[in-house]
Length: 336
Ligand SMILES: [Zn+2]
Image (tube, rainbow, N blue to C red; front, side, top):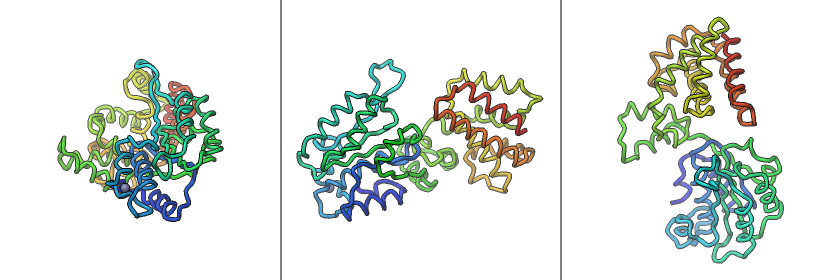
């Protein structure tokens, strides 16, 4: 086990191994990028490399006492914090001020056995405001012999004061070959080549998406969206209201709907510019996508993609979901 345990992310690995081999470590790192592409795994591997008892300065052996303890999260100088629900029925998980204070107390002591204490805070955007203010003090005056690793898939939700106190390291969606490698290594279930192609295409470079049930089970729902893209216009406002009502009552979360829409619009533009089936996100829907791509001008598709993008941005703030969705659909009509 070592950095090679993390697939892809060449740039992040390069920056971190340079820091290790030149002993030029930052007090705090911010690993950011989409979900499920290796940020948490990299944080653990980095913590191991920092404290590995073997001689290699920029990698972890995976076998020594320190590496094993960090791997199984029982090392007394390795801390891992993630959002939890205060009650089983609570709507959202959060990182609370008590947990931050507890962490600060632990970081106040000298390391028991490590060269450097490492604290990983996953989904740091889920700190509530009080916790955030308390944590900022740690970032401003970091305890000695400590490395903090903050992880987020939504950097836009972080306070600028938090971002500016960390060294940012960007993580990118995994290329198709790595997603394919992960899928092929799965022992159960075993997928046939067609299903693997579909999962790779629909993963957007994220492992959890490639493995999820929805990867292949949403074809009816995606077909409906293609119909909407094809037919929506000011003359067919009925479709707009039907669809937005169905979406607001449906079980799919809005960000996921918008992601699907982006994927479909991307595929339509891709077909329009002469792309082949193998490179589509939705490899299973070529027959439905192709005639729509033929009918729709590229400029209409581009305007729609822009409208989806703006809606995603609005929702990453505090926009009203229903209103944002309707505005997007009106933009669709305008584009048509
Ligand atoms: Zn080791």
